Image (cartoon, rainbow, N blue to C red; front, side, top):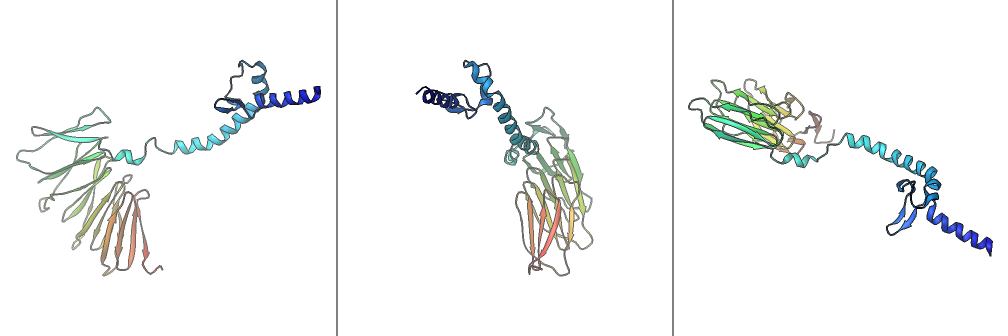
Length: 268
């Protein structure tokens, strides 16, 4: 009876003090989460070896997760879709106010310079007048791109969270929030812009000769020539992809990569 009683006591002791955990109101408590100097004096000592193994195993699991966490932003991209910059007028001055910094860049309009378009989205604002395109982001000051003498000033721009597009008869202008400046792509003689599209992190245009794409982390347009007599059928932009479909091919521009890929519609 003594042996049986001792075996039962040992079983109870293992249930209380083994590294499987001490059972309480919330269930089993892992050894490595218990205080070594707890009220049950022998309990911490008994679990110390098992705790080291368990804690090491936990670190082994969390270490690779820590690497992944270091590569992922604290907030999802959807948060960046909130407008964090706006423009207010102060007489002839345009003042940019943003929610992520204390700077308030401003620019003064010229005498009799009317504003024909103004829009803010995400991290950038774009203003068009009859003389120039003005862009500003949360990380910089106002940047301008003046329209040329023979260049008809557009009355509209496409503005997304990180990019903006302005199309004129002579060139395509893009504003990149990351760099806070304008980039441009001139059109060749006889070339005309047929359509422009924009997504949260991609901007693209189709001319009668090529496809043009702009990504948030690039400082130039990526170009892909169209084939002779290749006609445009559809054109769309999602958050990070622009898809252009012609009568022969499917062209896809990737914002993260900043490149075009082409595939024939017949699968070859």
